[in-house]
Image 1: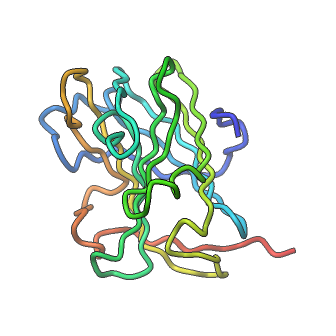
Image 2 (image 1 turned 180 degrees about the horizontal axis):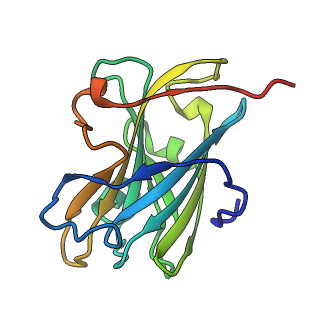
Length: 191
């Protein structure tokens, strides 16, 4: 895992629908992306190609969603509050390193997630390895159905403590209604 996306060759999920701050969103070059997911028996892997014309990420730990970042939400049900959420930050490619923060667990659990990022000509790339034990899945089972959401936070203002817009993987996403989350079925390779 190096933050580069050479091994991600299957079809990804587009993240290009503004769900908050559409008046601040300046289009695909401002904030959008493609996210890939893969898994095995121990890890959920995420790769992301993010277009972001102005990278702003000065926050750490539980504040990283204030800056440019990607959120993955998972649920085994269709009812709130049964949502697991991790925010992945590319860092700032200077003093702030790539990081993860699980918003629904203690701070130590976030340290078990490996995150790497690299700058690109249009923004950045990001890879993460998330232990299944840190998610509501625990141990993945063949054909398991999950509700999921991918949300890109975009903050182009270094002085602002909140993202200006949030971009999702579906135009009908309501973060407070799990019925609007797409479903993802786990198909594990057999030995």
